[in-house]
Image 1 (cartoon, rainbow, N blue to C red):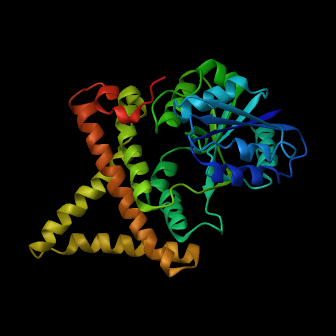
Image 2: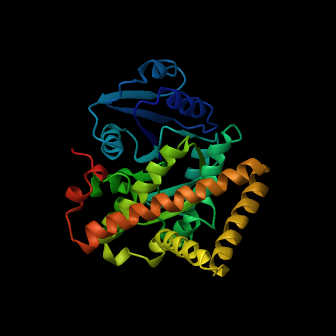
Image 3: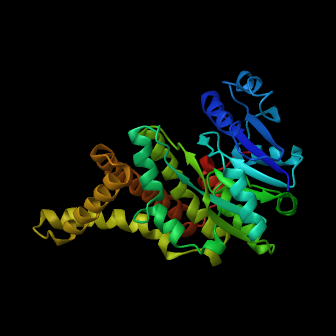
Length: 332
């Protein structure tokens, strides 16, 4: 199969260079192409692209800003491959990635797959803490992954693949963001396509580099879920409520603690102690262990409040999501 790598970019030339550098070091011995779609950036990556013209089969397109989903669709519409690999610009790709994907698809072909993510040794301590919060089995990362069968996995668009056949049939990503990737997965399932997780096809995903940007990201994740549940109620799960219930329970435990009922707060102290212990062991750093507690607090608070706000407007008040939460949608 011929792979086309699609990368939407918005004001991130430095990240684009790191990504392209990693792609130029691939050990894959077959041809593949790279398509960079600049989504209306004021800080363009065109100069960076020129540095890799002789190292990669690379194409560069500049378009007006319409969001990452639409930019991915644009990239796939001009791609020459029969299987598209989609990365975010803040990813670094291991040199054996394409070899792993090809081998896995030859063993068990699916029209859409998702890969996992990991923290690179060069990431900052905050990035490593955020990565722990987003991937650990004891946080929403674990809930998200554990609530899905490996053969019924909803790929995430920072690291996913989709066949040309599935793209043409589904017309690709919608205009919600974030949430465009589970939306696409569900639509593909309804059309009879299969998805799967290829866990060893991981990338180093930087995610957000500071706490405020991380909060904004997870808050939008929380807002997206009730919208998707309103569109596809048959795929709604009780686990989606966990961050909000965790947050509410924590507030109640603080109130009870003020009235000398301390047992509930001890459970939360135990949980955060486990977060600290596991992250410290994994990252070999007490500092990252402490940062991981901060990251998990931001994750649960951001996602939980976003979910409750969206649930109230979309599910309880039955408002049109695009009117109630316009920040979640790009206009095409």
